[in-house]
Length: 243
Image (cartoon, rainbow, N blue to C red; front, top):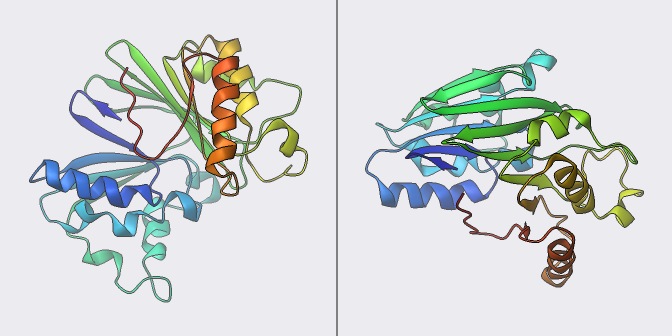
């Protein structure tokens, strides 16, 4: 997310590589805050390939809200990702100024002037954090890797997304598939619609697609989503949304 020139990045999966390349093209020195929902490998495996982290003069700060519950620290987890036999070079090869901020999910963050971020703990194996970014009278929420309770809307999530302009929501499965994936820590696009309608959200973007859902399947979801909540979208690679 770009808030008044401030770069806020949510999660560090494989897409971070292309973003880093674009950031280097756009500016000589780069700065960004990276907010992690959690540290499962699919959400952090792009950081080791994030070129701005290797260049001196750049300033990065990584945030996480779930590790303290486990007695862990973010710098330890990221450092372990870049150790043999998993990676050829150590974390110390990165020359940017990199800071780490461990907080408790539920805290309110003020990472840069004018930007406030509310957070909430999400039910996922090992825990995860949902975010609500508020800037210049607008709000966008990033709510991924949570397992909803069937037949009951999550009151905590409803409070987090209440009246938001945009919600990016974990839509790995469909309601029909969900019965086969209890305990996997994910939700459905239909549950996203139910939550967003109850909370008065303006637009939903479904995210975190099941890898076995091909383009034809997701095109079908996009049509059903538009019918259920007009103006909402299925996330696509390279998509840009302006509020």
